[in-house]
Length: 77
Image (tube, rainbow, N blue to C red; front, side, top):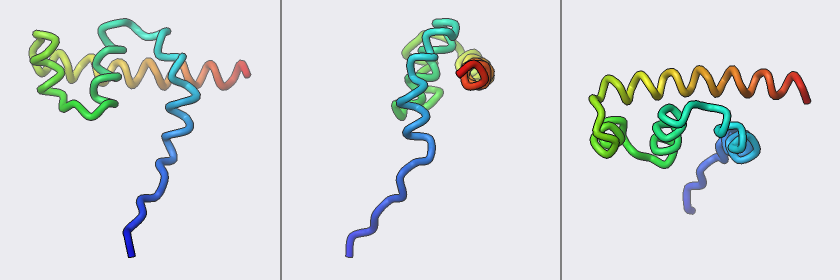
């Protein structure tokens, strides 16, 4: 019997809220998108030509800002 993966609880949220990414800073948005596509942070840093610490910082800030944007957006709906 083939093992089935449980659907991600984040999948529908990501698809529905993807348009909210446009409200983030471009440098944070690109890191979030690349990591979301499965890239490792060190690969993202190399492709953007920034230190790994900078990519990690942008990822952290991007996640924080996205959470804030989504929280506000959901309250307004």
